Image (cartoon, rainbow, N blue to C red; front, side, top):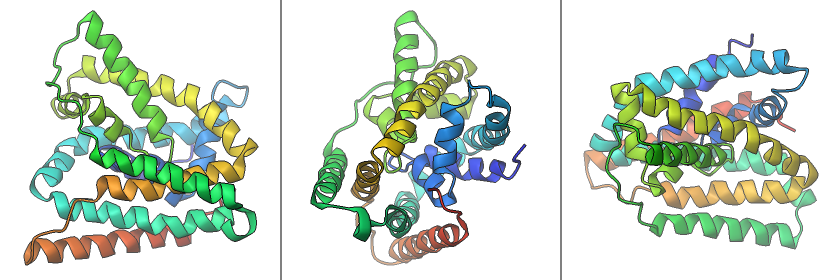
Length: 272
């Protein structure tokens, strides 16, 4: 078992709780993105034991974090939304140089790659102007909302696998985010199981497609990933903080996020 993946799962789990912040981005920062796709897409192969030793500790870290920190994240987003947003903004900005180096932009990118990057970035940035669906918190299951929550979990998991796209933000747009956070913080296991089942199915199905595209259309996929990461900056930008303590806290949070990203960048192995 690769038990060091527990702390990696811890970090990915925290980001998966934040609308606008991508767990895939953190996987890129940690240098395990390609390995994660390979493990998910190959889990039902004859090498399943090797992939299980990678995925199980990661899942333990993510699951533990989701259960323990849902209330903490809800508190930070409610009481300190701008410093929290600027910290993750720093993390996301800090990963762009790493992904650019891995993509070898100067060597591999042509004009159409840059155009693709811009189109994807603008498309995601425009999501900042989309009003989330207003929906009440679901606390009990019916046949109709069970199917809806399962499909929402599936959609969210596909987003989680792409750096720059937030699964939580997709749940927010679908009107399910409040239900998911409430279920985690109150341990509403039926709701957790239904959404979680959708997430797991989405992981195993979508990872194959993403893994194939990343290796068959490598440069185009890197253009898409960089565009998604840059576009997500506009999605989570919390606005200019008030002068005084909120402004200072936000600046410190932004710088801290940049420092953390660079620390991980320096320690990350190549994901090629």
